[in-house]
Length: 274
Image (cartoon, rainbow, N blue to C red; front, top):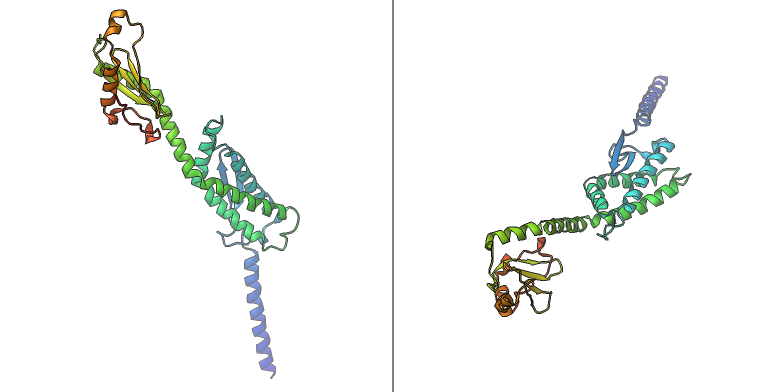
């Protein structure tokens, strides 16, 4: 019996030693490495507790407070720094579009980590202590707002790309018109010949047909075309100008050769009726 009791005692000591070793190993598990993230002019240091299979409840509370607060601050600056995305005329719109573009590529990963850390915090015994309740509440709020902002990113960035292309198109319009004049007009065009060398449809849908002798046909979207005679005509040349010929030439100008804004954003009106 004494021998049996000694064996049981030895087995108990071995089990307790093994359990102690396991608990010691868990307690000594190192914290996840600090990760540095920069978005625009904002920066936050954080740890991915879930990715490292670690528990934020084991973290030093001051460090955890600082890390969660830093990411909350970065998210707040992102949300506030992109509030003018729906207003292309805002002075800071271009800058905010660039911030959104940067965030679209990198912020979702950081947000997923932050959400996991906040879920981990909810299991901690100190979750209701100090600043943690407000950190958690504000973090969930900011995650929702930031995700809503990112959900708009594809449409916002596509619209911004169209606007940029249209601005470039407008800037290059004089050069295209000049090139067309040099291609289709003679050095001294005759008044009254009604030769169209260039037609352009503006962003509003208004269309203008330009003639070598300086005349124009203009048509506002949804309206009838009107003839505009060349400037500074003398009496003899004015008699040569016959508006119906210009209206007919504009109507017969190939619609596919009209210079239009990029992406087909302007309404495509039909050719004018002579």
